[in-house]
Length: 215
Image (tube, rainbow, N blue to C red; front, side, top):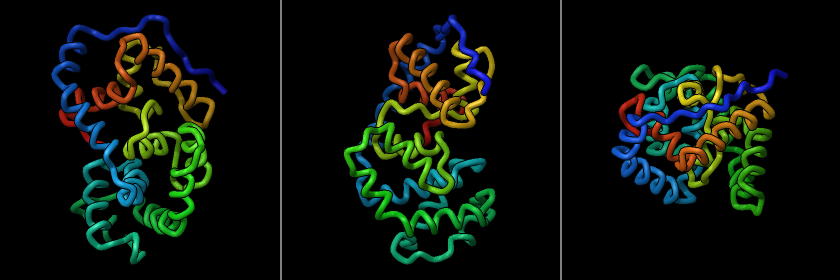
């Protein structure tokens, strides 16, 4: 296993500080939205995170709204046609449709784990090990979207910004538990250095690039 290449020179520019200050009210409002997610919405947030890998977040959001309107959790119909619709196309729609159906079948067990006394980190690891399609990134993303904090969400966009800010010398390989957690520790150290919570930085990196704050 190749170790994550960290640096000792963190950088958060004046422009970063200025733009973060401008965006922070929106960022805090979005995090508050996550904290207010109701228990009955958690299943559909899981569906969203199972749809997002290698697909547009906007498309995944549109798909989940349709699934919710059609009461997918209760009715359990095949979602393939919804996922492959060109209006909101989801890549690997057949595989992801199977994952959505499996998550629906196992939802009561998943919900029990979410409501358990396991630590946030233990819940994330359980999701990775037991929910088909859940990577470390997607498990972190899912838990953040239902109100959990301080679990690093690492993808190519975030990692690119962390390289820009001097956290890593180059984009690290985050495949597997050890690599992902090692890179997450680098993100945590940077957040502590700049005095901004990791969850706020994650949304800032997205907003500074995409121009909007998604989930």
